[in-house]
Length: 170
Image (cartoon, rainbow, N blue to C red; front, top):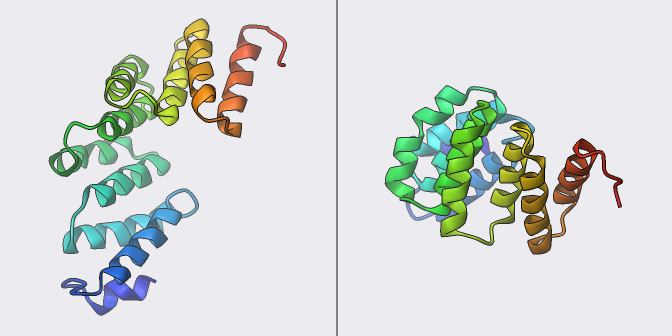
């Protein structure tokens, strides 16, 4: 897939499928190989910047632990994304990674006002609450997330919360 960018560094022309395939490939590598994903995404940004590309660049930098670099892309991301639940969620995630839990809580809360059914935001909000020892709030929040999506990630988080409260795991 990487060759697609090398073949046509000035743009993808009419072949949007190549661009989409390249993006999907980079997206799939964010966790397993953030350096390769970042190389591809930065090249794509120069050709055709999109909110999705900025979103993934931010997450690549987070995977690499380069949170200040992630924050540098937020203005570009904001210009294309606007004040959406996803934007607030993503900024909350960066702040959470930087251990700025109070600020992250504010971002996740703003995200939920715009998209109250976001189980991912609820899950991240509960992790923030755990990090600042507001375990009861974490439990309440993770229960809301689990009611929306009964995923294993949410169940594991709930078990961690119960363990912190010295309660039995069901």
